[in-house]
Length: 189
Image (cartoon, rainbow, N blue to C red; front, side, top):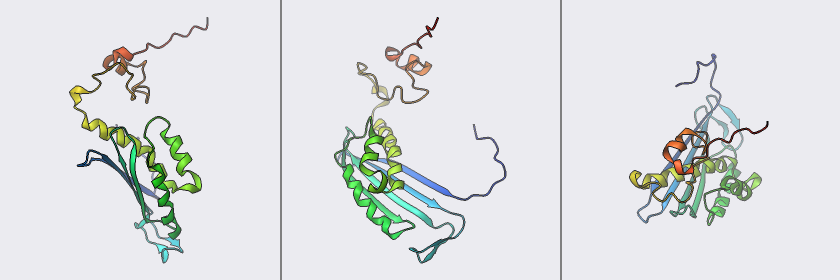
């Protein structure tokens, strides 16, 4: 279902974000993010010859995390192709500090402690939450759909991560009945 019709308006900013997951020949995973910000009008800029023209990349940044199958980062690389300030290039070096970290519970908090504020680039750092989701989707693609969740002794990590996968909801009751928890009755009387 589409959004409701919008009021007449004019565009001021476009951000395009592309995330892709790959299985490498060596058995590791590469998760890549590519961010591009553009404006539909020219803007003044001292570091880029006085002006960034309409449609040119205001920001264009890339990141690649290489993970093992346990989601441990074995390599991290970020680049800034275009930014409004030349000095932005230096922020990408800090992304190597992710090597050795593991994507999983608490990921966003760890990312903020390692790269937050002046320690990294805001735009590349913001991509890392989506990179984590892309990593899980990528690894899920490797699994044989008929073999998923064979060992159901442990609660699947995907449960209770969104509205639909709540352990007291109908999808879990249908697909993971052993982890279904009926909604607790309100006993305030």
